[in-house]
Length: 448
Image (cartoon, rainbow, N blue to C red; front, side):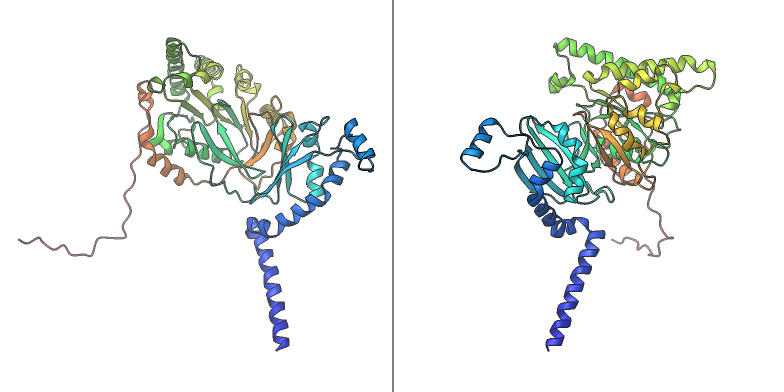
């Protein structure tokens, strides 16, 4: 009987160890909650002061504190680390709120984040300034970008669309009121189209007008026609559409002047025009020309885009531009337009110069990170945020059929904009479900 109990205990221990090993690979959230978080929390608690000291994140105490320590406590005066205000665990890591002592700034903690990561044995440590004098250490226990799972609370609202997952486990949101114009760069098969697909899926649920410019004959955006207010598939039609958008911008400026306000959101709700989001699939198709006769058309397009990028924010017209490259080699006006696009998302690129085109002028420190994105992780990108920092993100995989279904479900939200009616795309019919063959049920005639 004792031998049987011993065998059962051994089998149970092996099964438990095997279960934890399986959870570490297949269910990292479960493994982190059961094993990783308690171990990391204990390691953090025991080594906090010494880790901060060796990382250079301590300061000399004030004169009064040093005097009290020597005279009253009879102890040796030691450097003071940031004071821990709060520690809480999440399904992906730990969140630690620190009160910085006089002499330290958030940049000091950011510079030491890689050392803190190794000291506490976590996957990554990011630093966010919550308010003056306070920072939050966001420790991630495992690679959350390996298998993307968006937080349940991440839902479109207002003019905010969650489109990707940050490396700290929070949602990366595209906020059009904070970053009205944006540029997305990436090589082929880097996940750029998937990013735009998730963006359209979120925008389809909001009361906005979606305008598509897809000069690849509409292969990317034509399937989303039920939710689009306008769609053009050639540069000639794009020039005409952009002229209409510029005219719409000017009429909205007249409306703002009539009510004596300077922003669309200051207008009364009953007269406020609906926001417009312009989605450009590949900007190079609008810049490049094949002959001199296309020069006038190109000038019209570039001028209209620059005017919209410079002034349309206050009237609720937003640009979302995608490209493989976006530099001066596209021609006159390219760099001027790029300078107006505040938001930057850079996927895997083929050369360092392309990463610099997207990030060097807004976040130079992010350029090396964009150059080492692996090819086997499509959807991974480096993105800037409204606070002036940057982060790694990855877009969740979303099927084309899923986005089409959302566009059909919210087709009733397409606003009434008469100026865009000539560019409204035809809505494809939903094919009837296929049947395997003729019905074998014999109809029964109705009898009185």
